[in-house]
Length: 472
Ligand code: C2O
Ligand code: CU
Ligand code: CU
Image (tube, rainbow, N blue to C red; front, side, top):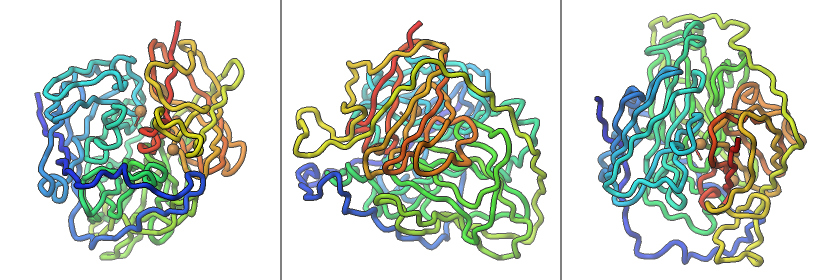
């Protein structure tokens, strides 16, 4: 059995409580902006997180001293690797001084293994998670999911990747080994891992001014002249990125949250909200030796987000030749769905501060309600397919995520057309301010309660989460 420490930034007590920090901004008019990114010098070489077999691993959720894990090695958890069909038996030892648990973002697991906020692992306790890997090959991830500490623990480093392989994907002989780079992009604060969102940061989300890749601030990676498979996760609490290469070259999107797309899509940028993944092929074969293209985020101006373009990762092009790869025109079959019943409508709203019931906590609501773990918001039949419509009535971006399923985005009633990223299976999708979109959701056979929520983790903690129950 392999064992690995899962880092967790140390808590620092502040002398003043941030919740006392009364902001004057009306919540409906976000006059604030995101913290400006301060780029590093791209002098630290990128490393990949250690990998463990998901079938039989032990994770230790453990506090590491700030400065040790966080600034040098980074605090990202190990990458868990497995094959579709494998049985998972994974132990979590909670060595934190507070409760935690694990949620398998994107994986279809039984309700009692999904890290529901009611399934807590107390400080000092352990749990073995057991389930079968039913998903297709793809990149998924794990993070805690307790009401009140999901956002904090994720910000402090408790998150990691899950990479599943299957025979269909292996048959494509995609760039692998040194030519496959999983990249977890997160924003962090120079001030460290202290997590103390002000009222205003609950509105905008808790953002940082430094960009980390795989737990390393502003790194570089050496690339040979050839094709690379970059697997991106936006693992940030709230920041949305519009990923591109600094010279605006086109690259090829081959997969999304739930694995391969039906066919490759040529794109020159990708908007990714927190929780979303993109699997891309980037060709460096005609780059000049010693040239330094960057993975960047372009400005996109949506609400308070995207006001700045900034560099994320530097590629140093070597003289050596890498591999070439000719992309097949068909990657997989994305089967069409036959939803039944009337669409369900979910309105994402921001309650006015003045009308807010303070005893209820949050201002971010779904159909007028904040999350309550004692309330089942709706029931669906096992193995049925439904259309869910989401309407964003706020001036904030909401990345919407459903547990227990992979779905397809059907249409966007207003705003942007269907995105390249949405031509496959998704578990999270972005709703820009005032957008409306419909998704078709094939529910699984597992009965029980599953969550859906905004993956801006501050919005989630503030109440923008609900639960559906799968019934026979
Ligand atoms: Cu990654 Cu319920 O979330
Ligand atoms: Cu999830
Ligand atoms: Cu939100």
